[in-house]
Image (tube, rainbow, N blue to C red):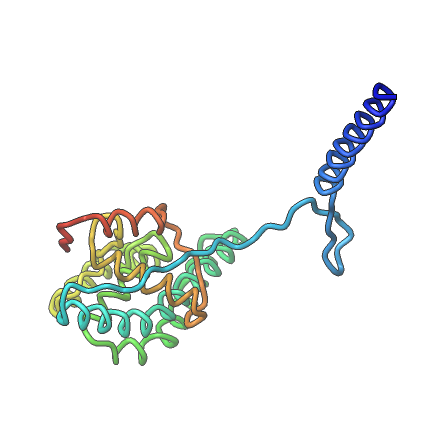
Length: 226
């Protein structure tokens, strides 16, 4: 009788273990299908999410500096985003044009259109807003404003653009390096927080850096120098 009961208990334990394994397998074999899509997916890709820490400042001066930088960055970012979009459109169109003469003519037409689209607005920017815009153009395109002008026009015109900018203490050769320059990191931090809060439409940078790593670097850097 004892042996009989032992066999029964063993079968129950085995059966319970098997049902648990089967349950696990059923979860592993679970598929989902999105509305309007005929493909079955075993997993759902989620967007990357950043958990932002509370902003901390050493003193009132540093806090004021950050918020002034934020106001200026949020103001000029849409122009940098638009410039990047126009550049992509231009390059795509040029790739479809065969003759050099036609490419030159099309570039000139786009050039006038972009200048008409930007000129009035850019003239209202302050010196610091203009410099932030130059950095953000590099962030979005991977090219300095100087090189973009050089490509669209010629080296001589780019030289004069740069010389004129220097008179206002703005360099159109400025690049964007949040891994090296603390102010550039602050600009990136401002952008990421604005993207997450839907205050700005996200446009990924063409540059190769990781915001999470930047955050750790500058958070642990006792000597934050620009």
